[in-house]
Image (cartoon, rainbow, N blue to C red; front, side, top):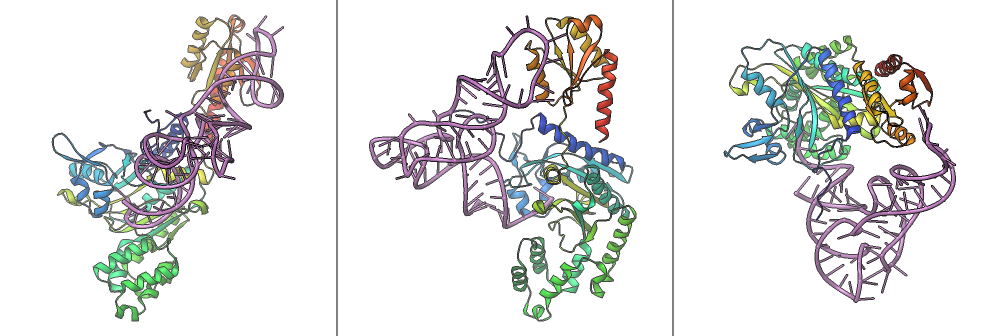
Length: 439
RNA sequence: GCGGACGUAGCUCAGUUGGUAGAGCGUCGGGUUGUGGUCCCGAAUGUCGUGGGUUCAAUCCCCAUCGUUCGCCCCA
């Protein structure tokens, strides 16, 4: 029996070209997070299982988490998300940290479930959180960071929509406005979560089944669907519109507009599961018709740090997965050009390796990434190798070049060759590298 | 966990109403010794995902299994 060469189900190998794209995406994440003053942290990939049991969502922990018992009999989980971990870290140093904390991380996470488009078993997720700020400026900043990432990746605002809702407003609507009990609220929340997957008729029928006869007589289903379709806060019914959570949303949209975020809209159907969020929640949707789905999401969760027995810390954050970002970039043709990190490929002619290697090292010392062909193959093969590796330049080094101290540099894309000193060649390549990094 | 589709050379795929397989691309070599991407010539490669069953005979039929993929459930 042959060993399989496939990676583990739902996980990916990153060949150099894949890794290049991953580094590009992570680079954007880090750059934008740091532009806003966020600092990177990290933590172990293993956590005690209890860390996840404390939260709601039982199926998630019991069936969708990788768990095992270690040799000491401890129940261990491979982290399925970063939020409990970062809350643990903040709680551990609750008294000594300088608030507000602006923290980010790019952990790999595992979830045990059937892989499908946009959702694999192992993925990397940017986590951006701000700890210690009660006010809406925290929400506004977090959404700005998410927006800044997409902008930096080359997206225009027509390519995505930021949909914002409020847990507090939702609670008021379900509990006080529609007068639902806790079981009904839970069922309606689940229904709302998948309203874009079912037909209008199916939605009406299912919601109808959840309401009591009295509620039905009051037109609960129509009231609900009317609310869910409202994209403008001003069009909500008076009692809803004047609720403090609605006023808060209004203020948030104003802050976002002032910050240049034009494509944030109100959407009451944004639920974000039904777990630890306590206030504003948001999701960013890809507007590509072939990939119209949520790319990232987050919101305010003021209660998690307090679970560790310390005073609670108000928190706003979001998570952004590498798979959904990649789908977004692919769908909008925003993938970076394939370019090698190797600046120049040295083609050595004849048996002049000794002196050639010295010249090559000089180029490295002057700051270039230089790969040298040490196969001894014919020149055309050496060039073909460089081309296949997407290296932009080749330098030819033979006896003649070494004795004249003039080397031939060839642009492998245009096919143009020139002869220059080593220093001049290095500066040409650096100019190219600088220009292409500006793009 | 549930349902659909798929699994043939490195890649994309064709094919046989059951008699052990092909194309394009790619790879490798050549078209005379210091220069690629075009062109011409030539070559290699597959236990047709795996195991079992039916059959004189299976890559093609049946069952199971593994994997890929789309969707459901769920979504951190």
